[in-house]
Length: 282
Image 1 (cartoon, helix red, strand yellow):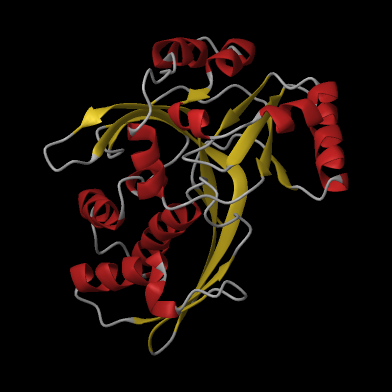
Image 2: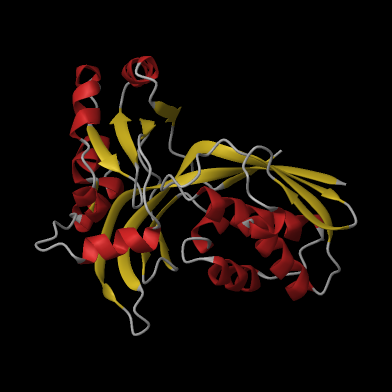
């Protein structure tokens, strides 16, 4: 038996930090959005548990997908018996939740392969144990995330548009990025309520103007904005803690022009669209 499934990346349409909890974890208020850029996960019956991610340099046991599968089998009381191959298309360490989405979709695929031994609540528990943003990818689409990212509120689907994702530069760990953010004074907070209203009204222009991220204070997006200014993006925002910028377009032709400009400058970029779910089974 074999299962093939696409695991869609996610971006942050907004990302705000609203405090810390008793354990010192940062509390967020963010709008998560699944996108069509996806990894492919192929699961086959085999002896033991093995995870392959060619050309990544990540060891099998160090992959979050390995941990997700291990916890699935423990919870389901099934002896591990699969080989999992991940075809990476989502760039790593890019603020796009690639590893988290792969882990969540792996849980869904394994549950399907073994005839649904775990409930939705049990899958959610495993997902949360793997990371605060993993539960989102059990369903995906457009959601507001609060708490440490685990409290999820489904929203109306995002209006149709095109994204050009622009990955330029590298970043320290997410923990270091939070520490740098904490050191800043007079942090500019996004208008989350305004973004929610724009989504409810299916108004992509209004939503684009409300897309903002507190971590943008740590990045200089002006060179990217200047480079693609002629393509008239509705906005250029940041996803996650960076380094990926998101240019938003109503027009596919303009989005393609932006990718042509970026490709000429040898800047890594991806053209994609909003997705209504985090997974697609073949």
